Length: 242
Image (cartoon, rainbow, N blue to C red; front, side):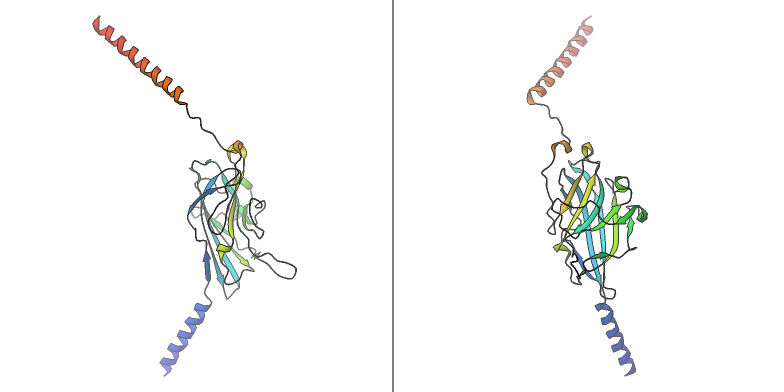
């Protein structure tokens, strides 16, 4: 009986522990390469997950951001600075909204080097372009000089309060500020909960142009090359006859 009682007690304990486990949520489009922007297009692969802990009442947020600027014909010099989630609960009067847990930020780069000191909680300048209020995320302390460069992957983790235990990340959205674009332009890539990005209207001054030779020009070039080749052949033939 004592052994049976211990087994029951252990089972109840495990059940209680399971009830204290984190409730998870993630974007349905996690890890997908998405391109878009407000003034010019840039590309990123983003993974965002949240975990609600019943015991502490806090929510852990993890954002993995891979800068893919340069892919699919986009400008390859764009640096990601302000990065965050939007449309989170905003406080009104005596109703508390979402808030950061100070000191909870941890940032690592693709080499798993801790670079937390170069970032801070907050999203200064991450607004407009369809971004809804209630924006929470990160901001480099040195601006563009400390952002996520093309080809780099950064992982951001922090804690929040004010999110319900059944919070669904897909009711919110994701956004980032891309700086250092062509002609010094900046853009905001805004992705809604369904994975649809914004797309312009793009500024022509912020988009590199490539010149494609016209058919007539290409024909003249081909004719000229053929003529040069023929002249060379005749010179070699004359030398052989001497």
